Length: 323
Picture 1 (spheres, rainbow, N blue to C red):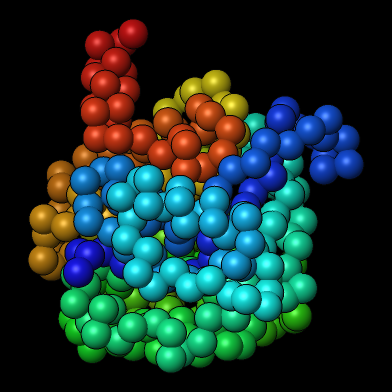
Picture 2: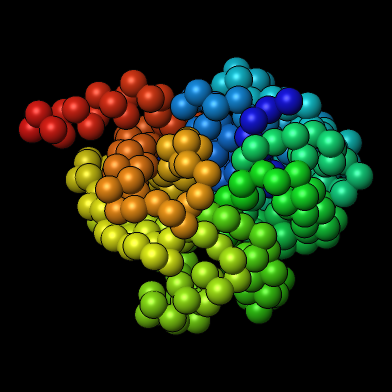
């Protein structure tokens, strides 16, 4: 049984061949496997964690490609289901060097939202030590019910739960529904990562302090706000801090947050009590995660760009050496 499990969307990203153009202006697109929770699963596997993915793709050529991609990256696909009716979800993405994205999804409905509660494998989930989820799979039934059932099973199995809301408002029928379900899934999490561009939508507050207070009151033990190339902010309710990012020449920002999450989670594994962590422990963890996020911007597509431990170590050593 895998040590870490991720549940949610697995899809094809068609990424613009050049940044800083709209979808209409893009001269072409590169096919790349994607979907935030799947990206985290591969990121964990590349960093040496035994990982599995729970989700659904179409019984089509794109679905076969995605399954093969996960398997080639040592991610367990026992509970990756092929849907005979709905097709694999597609996303067309135009990225910008500032981290913002222009995205259109082809999902009417996509196979990723057809996962049902009886397809998740409760025993499989309860054996995991780490469980990661997002909010995209909460946008429609039956995958909403499947995701919540999986979250509850992971909690009952005493796994550490990680949550990245990863807001994609265009995938929801109503923005208020998005907020409702995003918050509904929040109290189960031990670790929550939110990007700065999503913060105001989720918390209804530009002020970090008030939003953080609300999340911590739900029982979350570590909150991380990613700030793109500026790095990240973290707090466990007792200590907090900013850790600077790294300036790199960006090729594609898509998936940098997923690389960050995977790297952060691998480093947190050695600690049982997240609320007991001090600044001198959290700072190097976040620096490592920032490095992974920076490296993920160096290639088009997420999964091909997710770094290995040696790539992160070499990158950090170059920073230290000033080269």
